[in-house]
Image (cartoon, rainbow over all chains, first blue to last red; front, top):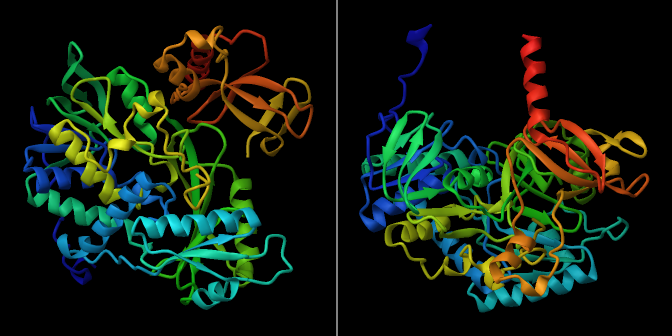
Length: 405
Length: 106
């Protein structure tokens, strides 16, 4: 039997033993952590660094998200960082020498009420001013972009139009992680899996190392990129974060012929749908209401998003649900991320991306690497500092970000 | 779906309830005296433990009253429910009781 199997492909990264010290340590081997290590090595020449991952590489939210990439956020600060991220996405397949199926198939954000229409048109104009490609489509134009959308006026929430960002799209999430990881490894970054950070070693208020399940590692720079577990790590390090962790569920159907050419999101009836390259319909919606670290949620949340999906796409009525799952998302009160220094010297935090972190992967990595390397915010992440909750300079993307968080 | 024991109505499906986040967060006695940092703590900072959490729920589809509960945020299991105004059950003893139960099961 074994001689019938093909050769095992080359491993994309080593599995080194942790060294006793590094110039910087990233806690969390998900998309954001790996991207941060990549830009630390590439842009800042820091190659004596390690990514510490409690489980396996990209096995958390990076393996569980619905892979939507877009930058059509309302506020200037958000548009700037997400658009920068999208521009990085556009060059990454070549830069990482890995075709991770980045497909710029566009995103439609549907409007179902007069309030939706006004918000959408306003957001389109704001996007244009910020250099983000955006247009307002009538229901008939929506139908041209995505023929399977029901634009009839006999449903509870008829489609009254949509915003359209043609450069938005999807990518194959696990391949994105592997592409970054391979390049990190080539530049000398140690990717250390099955290595849980259990404590922080401090000299006064300055971090000097971390305790892990694989021994003590000395370092004077620690970047936290742990999404739903950010609060747990911050508590170990001795500070608090304005984060609440929630379950967020997603699901896929069985495989179908290509029927869905773009990405459709609806804030009002709350579902987002695309069709993966392999053929599954991929859907997600909102978080389960309660705080949770259980990587699963309630079925009524799935039922609600399926009801919304079937009303918008009658063709889905007989599609079978194949699989549902949950991740743990780190939400903030203003639905915007935190990429920042912290009250502990040498500890930096990237968190609060909530339900939308995948699209931000390169942008988060790029700016977070700058903050870790220089100790200062990059202009793109300066507005996303932890102290905005004290100064009142919130970036309120709740309802403004084209989808409820 | 979780079955939640309302202190007034008894066990009902999760869909009858709404969530209210961390319990026992008092409105500041004199808000005008707070520093910006303290005000931010009151407005935006809430505990986010992995494990037992004292939190608020409202039985929207029933008695419409708020109450408190201690729930495990990993297993989602409710350990205790109690009325607003009652003191928080001792979290340590709840988790100790749980450990004993697990020990006995082995």
